[in-house]
Length: 307
Image: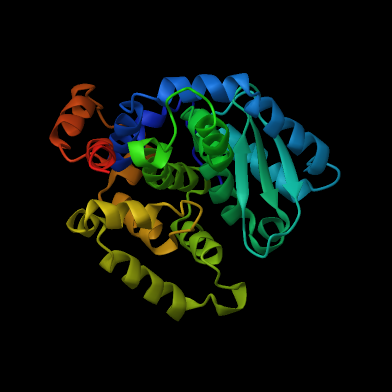
């Protein structure tokens, strides 16, 4: 089918408000600039890029044409230029993808993603990863990947940054990682422009094999997703919320489908398809942050001081 393209597409027009709030909270953590500086000094960006170059298989029009075509089409729809290189990496037993490289972004998909996803589903997954590049999220994403190693290195220095989890940075980072999934899923839907493909991709990422994807299982999954209420997380204790998001690599398929369906139902998705972009007021970010009095950083600072 002929898909709509979005020349000049900006992340702000499809950004999820929870993503925006979590990012503001993350950027308020005092030690963040120092840690970003150390990540740069350690050459993490170059190291991750070298690992891809040295271990994964570069996709070309000759070796994996279906991946190449789906990826290029996704880049054109979302107006991602220059088009990043695409790689295939070994199987992990579940669908997995990555976007890495602050200076020179690249995207990767594993063997299961290549074999288990259809064309529109690939476009949803690629759109999700490309959103991380468009939104300039990769510096923080990469920090999360190497956080366990960084904690050990920094904890042994005299930087005064030991116990990162206790002072709030790690918690704020992982919380934002989860919230950023909602924004990236919206970009994935804008890329494939197929709600059913987006939902089926999330179900497959959640571990359900294609053989079990039928009208009944899809309908029941959507009913379950619509019943999920993200706002109820606010009723949990800060510690419980923090603990639940520590495993940020968990697919959270139902929660993500819930937020994506809400966006569709709101009419915002159709408005973008019809060329009507939302008006984003810069003051919204400040107001949302000011209203979030019990931020993870404030809570974790208090916790650190009391122990």
